[in-house]
Image (tube, rainbow, N blue to C red):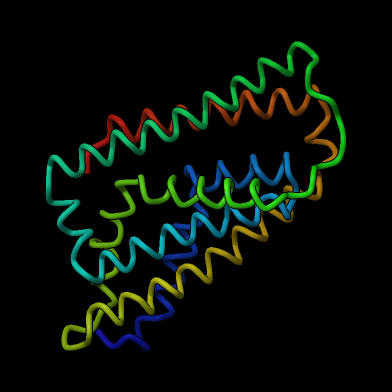
Length: 213
């Protein structure tokens, strides 16, 4: 299939897939609601950096090995579920603290360097620990790679296009959520948000843990 001819279909598919709910969207919404747009930017960039790593691994053939190996896939599935569990439990703990009146209302603090890299790393880990990302790459990308073309280079270009599109989409989502940031940061609303987001992350972790390929 010619890459230029298939490009519109690729971009449309990426847009639909990116808009579907999942761990990435849950993290971005929670981050933007509690930390504002500036606080959500490193999370978005971390998620997309992790996605691009998977694209490069798919182009090099490594993602296929992970998906084909029962042991590797199981380990990655357990790690991915554990990461989501930890994030969910943190949110539930914050919600429990908020019920005791220990969360003070106020504007979102500016992201310092340490906080920025922490949020970025969180996004990278969540994406890299997602076994479905490996399966997605090896099942979806080959449909748009020309049979006689360079696999790695074409996959790298497609990955860059997906990252660019998703970054714009997720930043727009974060900006929209951040507009209501003052409302989200009210103690009662923040407590409910933490409880809901924590429950969602744990549910997503359970889905990762029990789902197959």
